[in-house]
Image 1 (tube, rainbow, N blue to C red):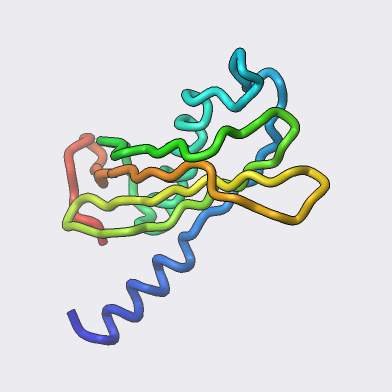
Image 2: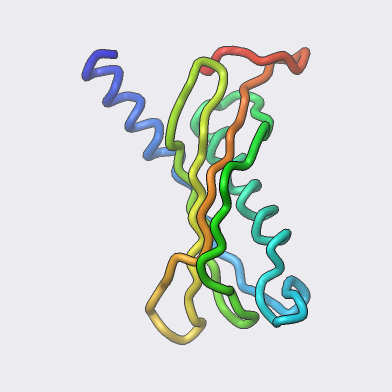
Amino acid sequence: MTNKELTLRDKRIERSVTRIFKAVFPDSTNHYDTLFGGMAMSLMDEVAFITATRFSRQKMVTVSSDRIDFKKPIPAGTIIELVGKVSSIGKSSLKVRVEVFVEQMYAYEQEKAISGEFTFVAIDDLRRPTMIL
């Protein structure tokens, strides 16, 4: 790959970075009053899907979620920021790394709480894998 191609790819990756903010309300928490893990994974997959689609501008489907690390509980009454970024690109697939940060509503500090990686495949109109353009 030439330096020019690498630069164009890097620009596409940076333009496709996706950030979504959510407030954590009691209806999305578990019996410990922290964000339910399944809800966190669903939000992460959504951010990863948006990131993959913004990068490729093609139809994308999730084919796997790789190791998801829950490092810090996310209590109700906090704000989370989900950040998705393309981490690797293959012929018909790509990986998106998603990090979830938690912050108190009335403070400026932010801590990484969850991270994981999701793999997507580009598909054509017949739902067969196709090359990422």
